[in-house]
Length: 55
Image (cartoon, rainbow, N blue to C red; front, side, top):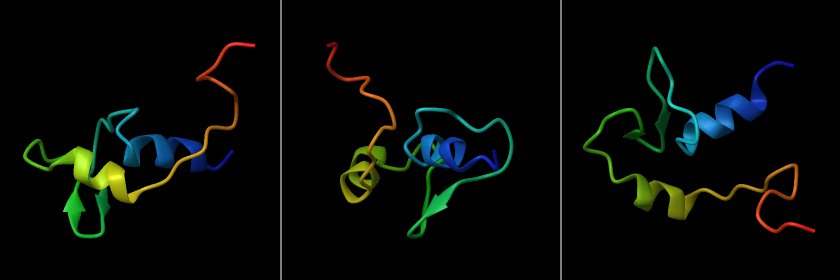
């Protein structure tokens, strides 16, 4: 693929980028002083698979 899922995972810091920066709405997410909980409250994400509740 083109990395769409990876970009979303980096925005939510489920994966940490090894190079470069990720900036959302003026917040640099790779900066350790950024309040990631505040950013996460503004970003919605739906997983492709049902990882939260076992069947």
